[in-house]
Image (cartoon, rainbow, N blue to C red; front, side, top):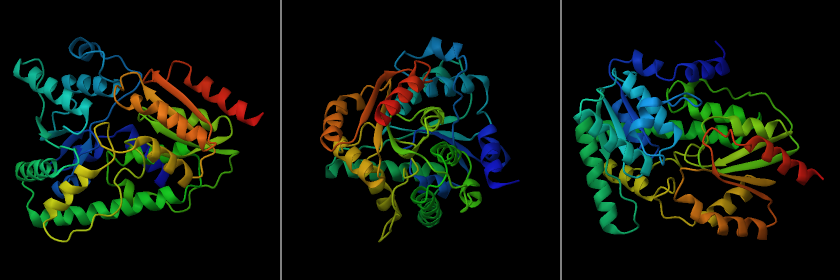
Length: 348
């Protein structure tokens, strides 16, 4: 099986690797430390299925939950995750935190079964007490998963290998952005991705480079919309971007302090404290973006407040930006057509 065929195989059965393992945990939310997940052994993000009905989840969840959470809860009710020992959620992500409480309550009422839910009580305010809280939360989660200091150090080494693989891939993009989106998504479900990604991806030429920022789309559909116009998404700035794991983690002492400090300071997630407008502009310059698409799902209630300043800084820098705010999560509201029109205007 070729490397790219392996990627497609993982996306076709995202829980296959976890099902085959002697023991596995699931997680929902991308602010759970990769180092701790790697230290446990086999961990897979709960997969979501776009464009599918979710009648039970719709009856339980408020409209503010995105399609990914609805899909996950529908699968949970169907028993798809029953083989997992536990599922980790994070307080650093609003959707993950709220879904944790819904799962707990639905289990208490006997509406659903499934694995034991745990929450990573991450705090992200930039002050010492918040960091101390996150350190204590990391220790509790390590204890719950049976991860001691030695195993956590091994997990950090494994996570650093994954960081290197993603950084190498992200810095040498040759093919269309849709391929890199699929690789990044597959990396959430199986560590096999990090050993099969080829160095000789097919080189392609495009008329322009786009930065895709805002909410994480359900899959590569926005990337494909850009590629249909002869452009490519050269980088992403959202929670599922290829650089989501950050730089390698250096441990100078207690590994728990290192892991907790990274999670506390991470700019990912709506609850992080970062100048999002400057962050976006810096990212656009680093990836030499000719333009930016700022796509925000309608359920996104926090990031949208930063849009006016983000737009202003980009326009002042001479970087065209298409703002697609308050959009359907499945992009079925004309996003592809607006992207085509945007790129067409720049070509004139």
